[in-house]
Length: 293
Length: 267
Image 1 (cartoon, rainbow over the protein chains, first blue to last red):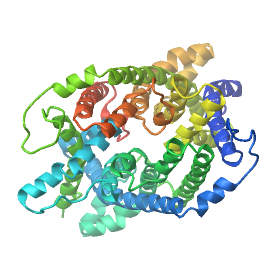
Image 2: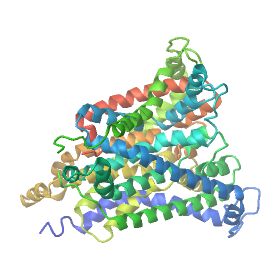
Image 3: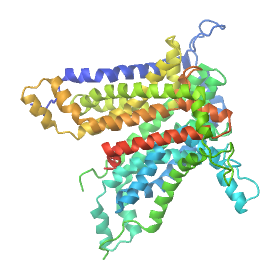
Image 4: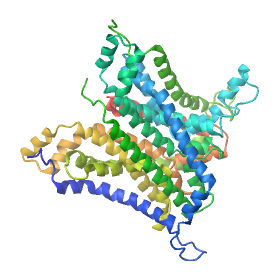
């Protein structure tokens, strides 16, 4: 019957072929650039064929600059993930538990408008808000809290603030589903049996939301890790992330094999993280599923 | 007893509201700044003006970039949806080995850093002798947006009753008319939600796009980045205000048609 095999395999293959073609192009593009990182393309003036070489990878790992960029990218991504958990979790929780439909609407609109307002726009907005003669510094100096402007842009601070703003909606929108699936009755039971709100949170809500935290946290981490535009605009060349370094290899040094090698290293590292998060997700399980309301 | 207790304290509520204000602040700020008549930010504002809007719309490069961006959005969106509908159909209704692996592969353009994808497509287009430009942008952005549309349509398809399709089949409808007359009409919310995401992401994308634009084919995101790098006035704020107004209208329409909470899977 249809239940056992709802659609025929021929239909499956036919249905999947357009996506397969597109993904073929996608992975084909990756194959060529991985190839260029170990077998640089022949350039006009130089010898026709440079042959196989690992020198670009060796150069990458020998460079203290590249290693430092990789490390700082990793560190700021961890910090951003933690910050997202601290300020995003309460927001997601209020969104799914609030009785007030006005409050829920306000919170979702703030997320959606931010999501849709454009990344270049937001980078530009932060540049003017945080700049030396920007909103915050002008206000602080008017009030007299500081005589000279605080340095909030063209350094890690500006990149961190703007990236937190960028990553947060991804975290909150992913965190809401799992939180919504925690039955309210369990929290009510804990409170009615005399647990305080804190105990209820630590012993009921938090443990049940661990799978959601892993999912939303890994998304936030992945988004932070691959940031490009915000460090480009607010880092001012002084704070760079891996994506910026790759961009500089190709558009400032015009060094295709070096860009390909550093992109390959970055690709492998991000896939490793992705795989690690997958393992972690399987360890913590699915969490409560969508049936208890 | 706590018959009607709030599940969270006031401080948690305050934190949520402050976070929402933090999210809204730059958006509100940039819209107000677009109407400021001076080129530099000052408090108190010196006056009200539409001149940055005039500046934006009279700028040849911005006008051209707007055309390219909306053209790409208008082509990538139906392309991405057309590829995603049969894909989602096979993933939800098919039972075949390697289904999870295939759905992972389809999601992979989301996981790979945008700069890596942009570089890969730049090298591919150059290797093919086509070079960067419109075709590369179309291909790269269709790959990048595919996960968004597949995800929206898979979620939609999971909610459909297979019994309707079975009934049509048992009554003798051929597979093609089951698809066109039974399945497709029920996919409207998924197509709207997926299409919105694809359109917005295709227009907004910077990290892939910046590798594939040329002097003559440039998009709004890349053009506005070079503008803020080279000039110091609120023209880009005016552009932002226009785009934010457009996306707010879009949000209202979507809210009417699909419902925001459903679209962002709060439900």
